[in-house]
Length: 463
Image (cartoon, rainbow, N blue to C red; front, side, top):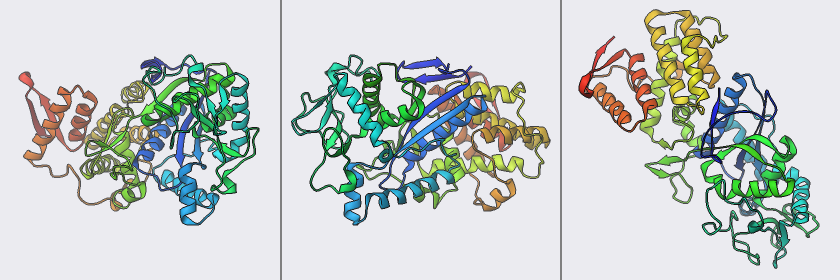
């Protein structure tokens, strides 16, 4: 029984789709004016994993991930480059697709571009105006009257007094209330014609928030199952989506809200303003793309993801050990028997809010069994379960030949083993039992057996 941590409920809830057997899921995608960074990589990989597990669980999934191809930053970058907006966005959409493919991310069922859904956005704004939620400001923008929507703030858990205006780039002047946000931006003389559309409110373009409300309702209907995105989008973007969609359609918008945690660099949130961000392409110059995918999935999607070369080196060593277990073994049948104990344990982990750290710990248990016995059945199950996560899908020999010779745990001396044991003890004290289990499983796959003794002591021996 799948349980999902619903941000709206602030708790794990049993997942029950609106239509039995069908899951409709929308995820906020990228604004395409630059290369994708590691924060984008996490969104891509996390919700690819979610879609894969839903399908492995027997659901038919309609997965929508949008592309924002009109935005203040896009307009500014195109003008700086002396090129058209479409030329800029087409180029970075191609780069996005290349990066996603490298990370093993399957293409969503729909990838709507905002510029192709402007008529739907106009219809949505007209409905909001008719229902009394939208008004024209003194500057000819069309704004949403936040205080008229009684449920505003329930996703972020903030009161109206706590909130500030939700505009993405600049706070619009002439609004009736500082909390109100822009639905339709009146055209500025200096903006290019390709950034302007005709509307009942004059020439202009849609605000950022209205895009996702329009695209999701057009492709999934006004009420659907799962909406995902990065934690930074919870407010104001997703809060505003709820207000727009429910205000226009008069029904519940989304049943389950999912938000992945931040990527952190040296314990600080990665951001362009701090200058501490890395593009996917920069990272892939140094690390295999599957290593990066494994690094992302080894952390729970809601937890912070701490990036460092040391963490990626460790991920590379761990992935190498999984591939090593498959080397020279002809895997058994790929069909998964979910009643088999390892598969059942894997399923329990994934059904517990997509707990990939615990699921990956099962992969190391199977790797150890394969190393110990050479059993084709264990190898086949290892490969099949890993494939559910988009891992271990390459030929082991080819991967190992391409991987660096250095293995983070190969030839461990006593001091290094003790350091890993200390890390496991620290994880247990922090009640991060998934991390503690992962360290034990990795050591076991490397031939190191741990034995916990009374008094909190841990002894080890080589298998």
